[in-house]
Image (cartoon, rainbow, N blue to C red):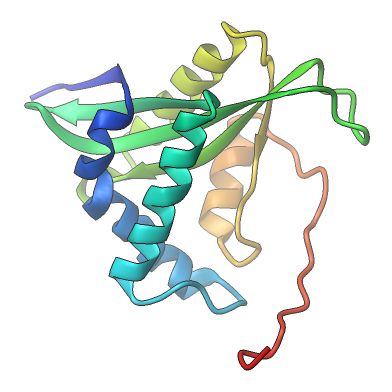
Length: 164
């Protein structure tokens, strides 16, 4: 079977749970900071974030499907306004989430999703693309570098104690 990448709307978000959780598990292993757990809480929080982005008109979703079943997805955002640090343009694209099912990794699907999302965002005037990657996720960092992205800044955190 071949994989098709299709545009989708918020109505398909519920189908992406297992894919998101496969990414979440990779990030749990890689992150130097504690991440939201357990899985169901992490998915519920991410789903709220996705729905908020769709409601604000910022979200663009591409789903990679095989036989009608999602095997990957890219969720991108369009941000209005200029960036005051880097000259990225009046509209900035952000790849918010990119995930490929474990059994489909290493076959070029991630790169296809990335490039399809970059084209989708560019068609809306967001020709620059921003991606955030967990600092411990070396595989993702290598992937994005192979696809022409460069590191522009590092985000540091001071995490408050849990009782505050």
